[in-house]
Length: 287
Image (cartoon, rainbow, N blue to C red; front, top):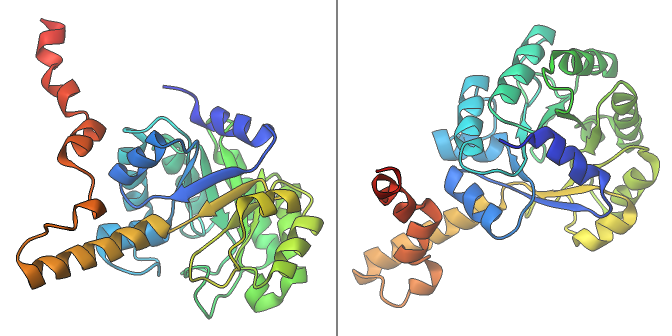
């Protein structure tokens, strides 16, 4: 299998912004790889919703996230960025988080400076740990890597509770401590996005969350500002949820789904994505 952390580093080193999307299940990841995405993101929000039907409030544990990541990495070949939350606890938990996520097939792990238990970056009431404590967590994470190519993304949620200046300072400190990429979560305006891009002196990831706190800008504008990686973190989940609700309501109302086929992938198409013929022809290939 290709060295996916190295592949992600190659993407980060080449010119241009990297477009990525969050994925909530294996099939979604397979579909996005097929249409041309070079990098995908597995976040806590979508994983908690899809596996447990629960919000992003620390219901998902490390083992569940690693299992979801392992299943996904086994069916796609492009790099996966995995949500490591706060590292699931103290320094020793951070070490275990990095090793489990790396062993499950991730190319990168995101660690954030929220107080444990954390909450979604666009929820209210976030609190952050001291910057010095986060630096220790990042150093523990860097030392825990088996493969030195594993990318460590340092996310700060300090903008809401502490102000944008503090968040920018933290982002720079975290990368100076060894993190490869910085993410200032939930900027509130174009001006905030521009300020972050100008003052954070390291590769930058930005989340473009539909219906969130941050204004949605095209990747081309974010690239011009200086961002390296843009992620639509939960949009596949939101789109799937709306489609399922609408299709289900139509079936209850009409008793059939004629006329709704344009919202669905055909049976032949889904068989192709899943590799039905490849598996059914295996006996003939090996006899």
